[in-house]
Image (tube, each protein chain N blue to C red):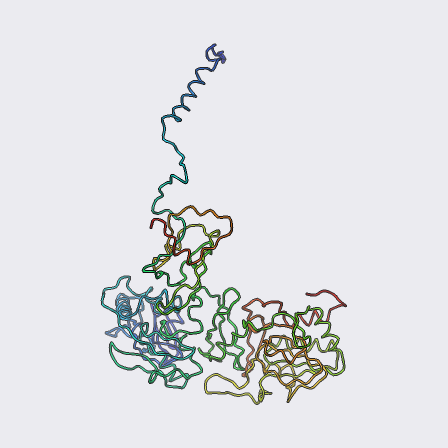
Amino acid sequence: MPKCTIDGKEVEFKPGENLVSVAKRAGIEIPVFCYHPGLSVVAQCRMCYVEVEKMPKLQTACSTQAAEGMVVKTQSEAVKKGRAGTMEFLLLNHPLDCPICDKSGECDLQDNSFGHGSEFMRHSEERRTYVDVDMGPVIQKNMNRCIHCTRCIRFGDEVAGIHEMVAIKRGNNIDITTIDGKQLKTEYAGNYSDICPTGSLTLKDFRFKKRAWMLKKTPTVCEGCSKGCNMEVQHEGNVVYRCVPRENLEINKYWMCDEGRFNYQYVQDPSRIVDPMKKAGDSWLVARWEELLSGLRTDAAGASVLFLVGTDLTNEEMKAIQDAARALSPKIQIQSFGTPGVETSGQDGPRDQILKMKSKTANLKGAESLGISPLLGSAKSDVVVVFRGGRAELPRIEAKKAYGVGVFLEKERNFFHAILPGLSFLEKDGTVINHQGVPQGMKRALLPRGRCKSTGEMLMLMLNQRNNEVTA
Amino acid sequence: MLAIRKPGFLNRLYLIEIIRGLWITMKNFLFHKKVTLQFPEQRRDYSNRYRGQHYIKAVNGVENCTACMLCPTVCPAECIHIVAGEREDKEKYPVKFEIDSLRCCFCGMCEEACPKDAIKLSNIYEMSQQTRTVYEKDFLLEQRGNK
């Protein structure tokens, strides 16, 4: 491998690699605005200046490829002066509304201004202002904060596959907007907010809810489809405020779709059932755990029993259900359900050119690997027990008695005679296998709501229950 | 060898010492300035730096606060609770601004952190209360002390 020297350190690089990523590997941070590893290089923010020996002028590190024997300085006086000058130009028109801005705390402009800018400002003229267009339900725009890095334009062109953002006018009047001021159409609009280095494009869903530094961050995996995008759940006080993608070059690169990003909402939906409940005539009554569990045990040991396992459960839960079924009665059938029309991983495939998959549940491959056959048509049996993580689409149930175990909203409970509330994907640890066969771990971010219990705990209580023993 | 001297008759009476002691008491009672105040009628002047009751500064009836949440972030007692919202004349404003007065330790860090000069500590010090009091936004907007 060829080598170059950055700040006195010898670093190996692959031919064609640019200086920003080579320096990052050596632990040297070069400040950037317009450069993003997932997008093309335009070198127009001029923030990543470095000094390269034998080159007369400062070079932009993002557009300079590393070469054998290259000697790069990132901390020389000329570089510092160049960066400070760039920062000063970028801040000429940037409003001082960090207290209002949702980006503050995770803002590249803030960080780089603190690290490389000047403490003082030399101009006192009025700042340029804009009237903003409505960008649709996902993105809130504030053009005054924009620094024209064009990351959003490139993201639309190169990743989302839709050319909807453009730079109109030139010079001081430049305006980054949608074509003809239309609303955003892409289903990946949330990424605009992630890649924006300032608070120019922010999420409407997250607007003014919390400041970035207050949120706890838990790395987990999206359960929106069988792609298994890596994401980070940002939460505080047992409430999720937003989900952002995590970098994983083999699966989702740096992106995620809006469906997955806002999927967390059902977890804290006020109509989610968080108490064990049973149907009494037309109304629903809160029941005791022991009552429902012993009822389930008696019914499940009966003649014709079908356990329906949602493909949105984790491998651990599916295995626990299999073992429990075996312990209860050898006659119990286990079948999986998830997305209608996508019963096996053979029928699964990409739904668009970017990330989305046809299977709407995360663990179709996992159910197959445990040998659970898919349910075809409607569920017909005397007793049907539905185990569901919250996303699998409920099949038609024709049964004398139906139990729902897992996450259900109030509108979904009418099929059932009793609901045993379980944990959603944010409240449990577990493994899911994505469409490529990559097993990934989900990590618990929230404490269970109400009286929810994990599937494993419920099954253990049910199997070990003596008569009328108080369990909950 | 130590010789123990017996005190004389006058000393054994202790009369002179009693009169001397009483003189100090009388001197302080009659000729010195009083240390105490007749509180509700008379009040002490506190320094302008005194940290008492909080208030939110308002200019032309609009609160300075933009709900940037720096004060709850810096607060060591975690006694400030803000919910931010949007209204027509102001992009971001505090819908709710509550200070749990019993948790507050009056360190004044919120005042120091505030970028908009909105939350301040006045020199109101009469804040005794019989129940646990949470200061609401409307109440805080009215409290100003002598500022």
